[in-house]
Image (cartoon, rainbow, N blue to C red; front, side):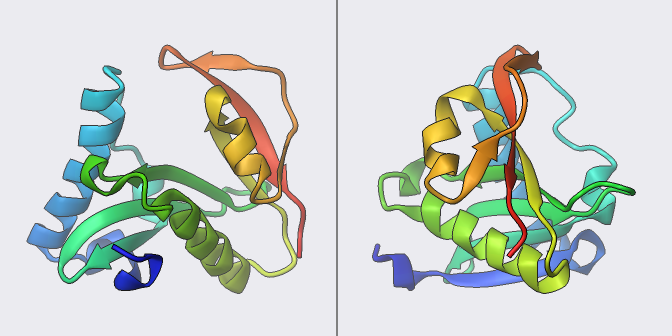
Length: 151
């Protein structure tokens, strides 16, 4: 699949049909809980306040992320996931570029924060994020906080 073979959908959680919601949440659970063998509360209250961005191939969710602005903090992008069947096609980069753009449109002239798995610092660094914390362990996985300067 070429990077242009997908379309982008951004919406609040309550705007999903039951089937669309199931597909997105299944992708997240498959990646974060099953593949990473990490038992943690995948669904949280941030889902209720976030906008959810999906990359779709026809009606199939192939990647997703969420973004929101916590009180008194910069906007955040999180739960970045690409389906296992669609990896190696630069969809992670495409997904993050779409998420950054959508975040900048809704929260202009503000930095963007992420909590990145430590082994992905180079990837996120290539998208303009800089490490702003020491490494820490969250849900058994090493992470660092990263920030992308306001544009």
